[in-house]
Length: 316
Image (cartoon, rainbow, N blue to C red; front, side, top):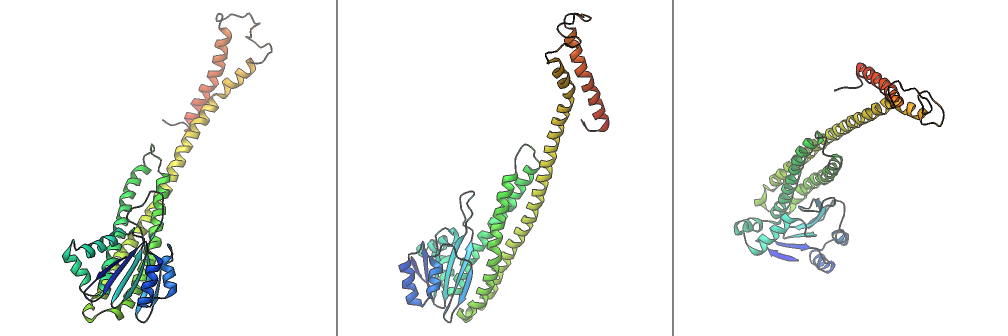
């Protein structure tokens, strides 16, 4: 738990929170017990509860770094009043952790003063703004991945179905974050007015700018989703075409082998046949029977090949 004193308010940040610490804050600032339970839950649906002296909001953001194949969201719980701001999270929101370090150590004094010298509402705007900017950066990474997948879709030597499925899942996950986020930032904008100082009249405009960024994220994700659907259909069509070509080749090979299979079957029987072992005809020498069998197998296969070529079933 880090406690940072601002000019007119105090900022308390809890990473990997302990229930005792949150309960002490609840007694001091009169937090609702249900909101405390929501803070301790690692995954709670986004919500906003407004009270006379503060409001409580839960927002979801994607963590900046995560293992491949693991899909999870980072939850940020916020209590905001006129003279305090309490943030509760698991410590995996790196932009927020960096803000805490700046305010604690003063490594960037100018930015620290800008964050802490005015009101808790402005600090909340800064926190949400950097997290939304990170979300926008993540959505732009998806655009880069789309370009890579486009090249792989038209490259028959590289499988791409799994990559498409993983990226579609990532896009849907970010859409489930961005759409509720816009709704709750709008509600924060409406609720934060009563906790703002007169000199913070532009605070609503600041939050409107954040909403514009969220709209860009949503627009990017929608375009990416439509593009992914096109790539999925394209990959399916190309894969089907490739499979059909393979089946066509195998079918033609099997068809051309039918005459030799039939003749070989007859001459493999333990019965007397023309040109068999007991037949003494030596028209073409000692291999007369072998030559006759080869010709009887090859001629029908060649005739079928020419016929298939004429029908257009065999292309260059």
